[in-house]
Image (cartoon, rainbow over all chains, first blue to last red; front, side, top):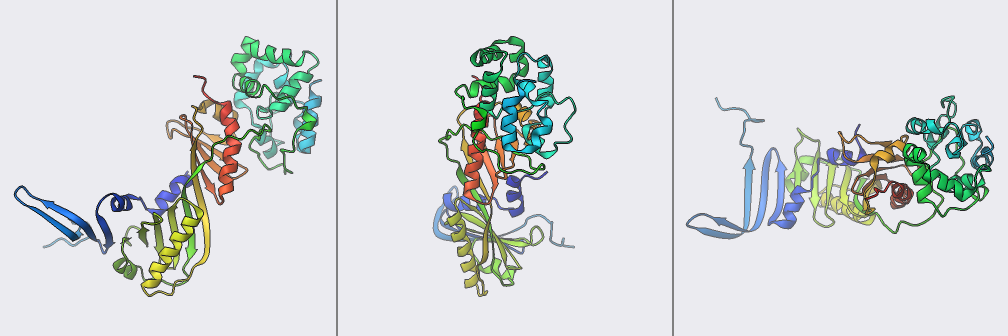
Length: 74
Length: 328
């Protein structure tokens, strides 16, 4: 028995998570296509023990780490 | 059986399909009735008022009690006109008699306590019964018209629109901002915009679903923004057949609710399985809205195509919920 309330959520596969991040954090845009994530962040601080790097804009390109969906080498 | 007349008058006033049930109905309100002892069992298994509409011929032969707790005026009137006792004495008798109170609990206590002020005679009953076919179950409607003073707030609106052109989803996902496209999981691009904060599902057929808006206008505006994004990417997008498919509202009645009681009296409309889900699921017939009712007093209403349906459903359920307020 699927209730309409839940039907909206499951059908859309849409949580507002990404958008919440947009509002709260510095996420400018995001994209997911061909199993590749692309993020653009603004006003980011990269902190290491010794160094601190501040940038206005950062583009992050990320792929899946696991072997799912991709051919194993060898 | 002398109690039949006022009730019979009311039922005739409403519709003729009740005539079959009249012989059984008034026992509930007669303290002198020898069937009193049977009431609690009858009450629990009882088909609710609405079901009379549904299956008038399937009612059990020994149908000796009727859930008419939603007809407070008739209840009071019935009591008052009962020749065996005076009106107020009867009420006192009903409330005071211990076995009756404990047994009939839900019905009698609620109907007598919730509407102590009802004095209208039954023929004066406002036309609360619209013309009904024998197959129409009806959610009990209370004639007492006190507004709840609470307005449900819209939380989510789902709408659809046809962009009327085939779309290349990969193209859209690669060039649009804030888009996700994972064809293995779901065959649509999931795009989001900040203002109004919404999410859209865009399909290759050109059809689009827009969710998350808090008002009808916002939903339409958001859908137009998505259409513009698609248009700017080079597709000849139009804006056809925008339609709101579902509206969700929520509110708080501000008192705890006895869900067990509610499911017993409104069996026809309720389902309550606390081990599955903590809320009672009430499927109102008119308007056709599903309500999730929680012990805390919070209510979620969904299934509406129009805002007025949400408001109407809440105004319908509020007096019923008042009747099941937890005595703290």
